[in-house]
Image 1 (cartoon, each protein chain N blue to C red):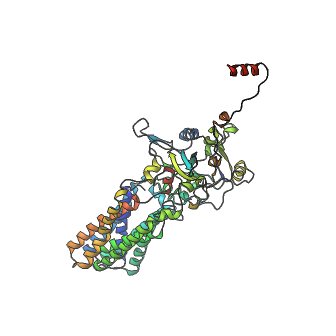
Image 2 (cartoon, each protein chain N blue to C red):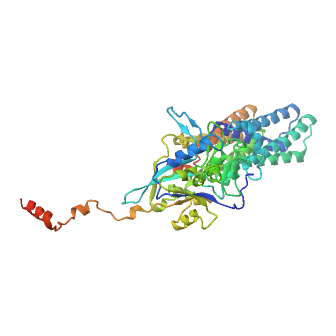
Image 3 (tube, chains in turn purple, brown):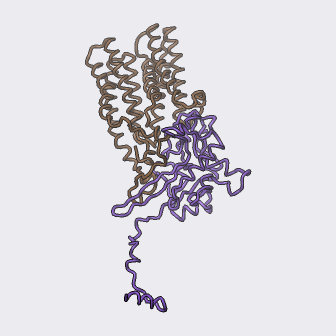
Length: 248
Length: 291
């Protein structure tokens, strides 16, 4: 059924810390690896070793530059995957009911055996979170690693989305936004987490934490401490040596 | 947006076909027997051919029956259901008309009404897309309905009516372009809101996530041919509505002129539909430094 639930029991999602992300793309690769070999159709690559390789990814890292006039530029790495919106337009446009939002945890999923591959859900998503798999002809998207987070066959510390588990910088956090005491709720409140394109009215669940504004730091002359160095009075043998050498 | 040929054919031909069903259902065109059959067959060929073409756009066309299930929420599903209902009701009306020479007025009105609803639901597939600001306006529906009605009137030999509808269509088309040109800016979306980094300064893409292209870029970011947009608009407007209007209203009606006008209008219609997709910018382009 492609109507959206009135509310969901949990609101599982991610917090992505733009201040911490180093842009290593490890989340991109681990996402591709996990999701190509587990739930649903594999994430295919076309012309993988040819001149124009193209492939399906559920998570991609963009890099942006922010610049204020007369200030140094600041670079921000920007991982982007499905935001599991509360008011997800991709769900209601689906003509077959393949696209749905789960009542129990708010995860937006695609039932691939019902998907006709019309691509309308990808059009409706302002964030580019959905990609049609060229080999399979069905729509692929982030599942929040639904086959990991409830999986009792893997160690407990692995029961988080693959991108979160792999991030070497700790820039990605997974949790329940419906619980005000959860790690993600506390982080979002403490660091003033924000929504992407709020004007689209999609009410994303995933939140982004802002990078610290480095452009406001006063200009530091890195040679300053060296140039301004005052001769130090040193006693003892070294002091005598210093004075003697100075006289030569 | 990528102007896929299957979708251009789908919207253009099915609009004409259902436009014909509107006027035939309203009892216009005083013919019967074989002549009626030919008009009905053309209407079905256009509507059905258009719908069939849309199947080629699908990754799994064999599952198309599932698309009739979500009419409560999805405009695409509604379009499917309504088109079948319109063609079904019109079919009964047409059979009685052709073989019994009995045009049942109320049945025709229902068929006409369902045909209008079908064209409207086609337009809503696009007009509902908030992510494509140029489409997200009631003008999209007005435009689709006007193309369907003007083309339908033309194909059912309503010469004078078609002429005036073509003139109205030209005005609607120009208005849609003028309003559409400012639509993206009006949303307030830019790279700053897309990344949420606008508070830090001016945001620009430094590096794409990958060196090549991807599905999103080839589907939503169509920049080829944009430089010829003004020329194509003039061609689309001229052939699609203005020249047909002049020919229909100024010249004496004849089969030859009608045929010429139909051909001219259809070329214009295809140009306009190509532009409808090629001109439309998706907000996801903001993440790629392109629109």
